[in-house]
Amino acid sequence: MRLRPLSALLLAGALSVSTLTVSALPGTAVAAPQVDLPEVPGLPGLPGVDGTETPDEHALAALAVVETLVDPATSPAEAQQTLTQAGEADLTGALRDLALSMDALSPADRAEAAAYLARPTDRRGDGYLDYEGDAVQRICTDDLCVHYVTDGTDQSRGNNVSAKDDGDGDGGASNGVPDYVDFALSTLQDVHDTYAGAGYRTPLPDGAKGGDARTDVYLGDVGSMSFYGYCTSDDDVPDDARAVPAYCVLDNDYRTGQFPTNLPTENLQVTAAHEYFHAVQYAYDAGEDGWLIEATATWAEDELFDSVNDNVQYLADSPLSHPRQSMDRDEDLAVYGDWIFFRHLTERHPAAVGGLPVLVRKIWERAGAAAGDRDEYSTQAVEQVLRRQHDVSLSESFARFADANLRPGRAYAEGRAQSYPKAPLWKRTTLTGSKRSVGAQQVYLDHLSSASQRFTPGAGLGGGWRLRLSLDLPSPTRGSAAVVTVVPTSGTPSTRVLRLDRAGDAATRVGFSSARTSYVEVTLVNASTRYRNCSNGGTSTWPCGGRPVDDGLRSTLTGRVVPAG
Image 1 (cartoon, helix red, strand yellow):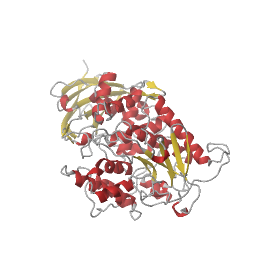
Image 2 (cartoon, rainbow, N blue to C red):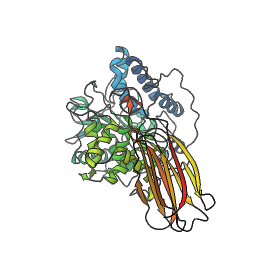
Image 3 (cartoon, rainbow, N blue to C red):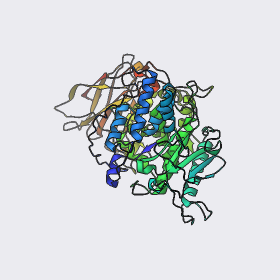
Image 4 (cartoon, one colour):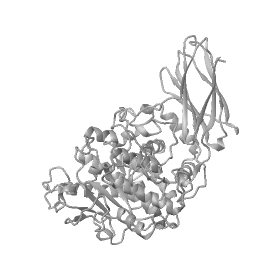
């Protein structure tokens, strides 16, 4: 699911029930408003905050989270705090968690959960987007159907699509179908064809739900609830095979009063690409780790509609902006910002089929949970694809990624044009002729995080000098890696991944003359993907429902200027 950042809502003056988190607007670096987020009373923890929930406690917590998020009385701040307390990123994740756990509920609670997962056309009602007896129409291709209403008795909910049908740029000639619906259908079909042409599985058939087995997309006023759209499943999710059908919901107009950035047609395009990719993902594994689900869907929307660049807004919550935070936690807008990792990988390994890089599809093929699939969890699948398809370790790939994030304008194809933020440095050190060394610098890194120190040659180092670097890191078996980049006063930076010994130690020398060297950057990395108590279907916010093994590891770096030679 794609969410509108809270700052965008404040600027638009449209504060209503929402599943919002704080971010900046696309293409800006402004700080988001500070919001007081009190505890939401009576809300159970979720998922696996202390690792002790029984299945029924976990399911009740999931139900409580969804109830709170869709309650019209819930304020944006309360919705934010609900997500934070629950360890969820968005409503799609909360609905997914509810679908995966609802079998543990009592019959009465299970019926309530089923109502929240129901489609807008279901007479039971889903509680937050109901057509409520309006005359529902649909238009279909061979692959999918779009459902909508243009009139009815429920005018106050605003689910109606404009009946305008003059074919003046919104997707169709005067054919008895509203232009907006024509445009939505043609966009969705293009999205479907692109994913299928790239070799992805198509969404699974849903039997007679929605009228027949085709994938269903519903149009309604989700913008009033601060959603771009969402995708979920109203199918039973078996424990042993979590590949299931899905249906999606998109806004009925993406009007600027609710969506102040981008054109309405652009918002529909990127949301259709994002949400439909969730339906594709569910054909592999609806229970896959949330960070992989949202990061690759956000990556996909930019691949299909590259000129919109709506995903740039999430870089404020990405490893670019927060290199010291673990990348793989299923929480907050960081799961959207993680798309930049897959952009880095696919720019480095660009082999494509049907116009899309193959690497992400290969990851989902290894993550699949249908009968006969490998059912690998997220980081496991990423690591296996990198090693087997590209003969490179995840540790080295993540180290190169962390280093590239120091110079995004140079490292990414759109980094300069889209003003990607630079990863902040851990330390800056200037060495001079009178101060030629710096003591051991220590940093403690959690898994899938990094820290970078910059050394700059100062006064008295204009001649032949070199920088001697000594590294004392944890063993590479715990994910340690390091990169050194020399940025010259003119020309192209040179980057080298250091070879660590078994203990995690390394030493190297690089040129350090102020006449030829602008600075040297050393990036220390903890790329561990080890988890304890790991099993798909677990209840933590980490991959495979487990707990990270290698957090808080100490790395030490020492730098000294020595004469060349």
